[in-house]
Length: 118
Image (cartoon, rainbow, N blue to C red; front, side, top):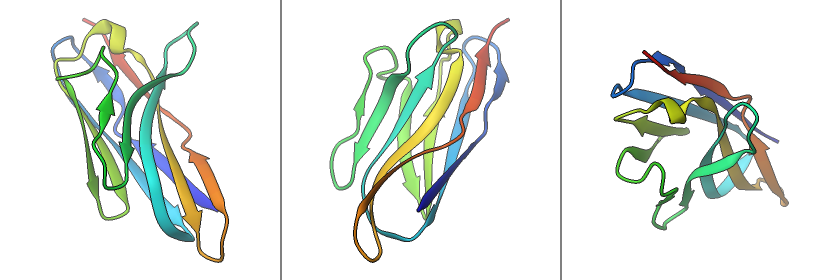
């Protein structure tokens, strides 16, 4: 199994910045892709950024130029700049993995709240 734990959410004023972190742990052989999703109240969960292993990160049009995904050792980050009230949502880390011993596994974090307001 694979566990994802997000952190770094909070309250920020419009125009501000936040960096979300996602800690990855488990019996991972390889990572096929990591992604960030968000879900605002009353709305469906939407893809924010998709980062395939060895590929180019794709961003939702609504965050392009403001959000950036980066990777560290067992970590994935979402740098969010120029935040807008419409960015308010619960943000989820997601990953597709191949496991030691075989098999594939899709994992979700528990989510972290981001609130953008004045």
